[in-house]
Length: 114
Image (tube, rainbow, N blue to C red; front, side):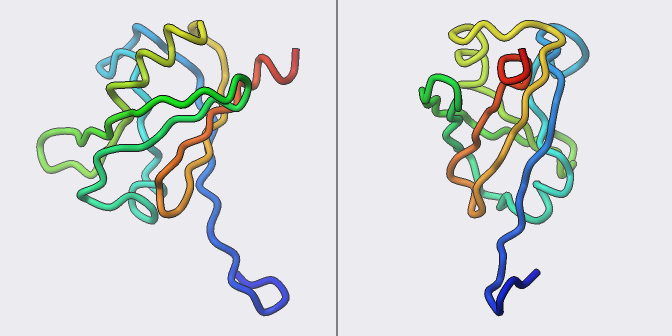
């Protein structure tokens, strides 16, 4: 995409509902396919999660699902974030990932709109 002759980098943003204890992932955050395919490198193992409400940052590991799948998710560090900020099941968050993916910003939508 171009604006005024300048290339505009793609925006990697998605909304997700927090499910702390449900399903196989047990509350992990899975990257959408388009983020994995267009943004994350195979060897990418770390990302810094930044909470936009309190500006705290959390070093998180990026894990890959076993079995040759291209699925990736945020693991260690995410659970510390959940505990510290007190996100509850059912809360909605918006994620925005830098490209290249050094930082991942978290916007708590329930906080913003309440």
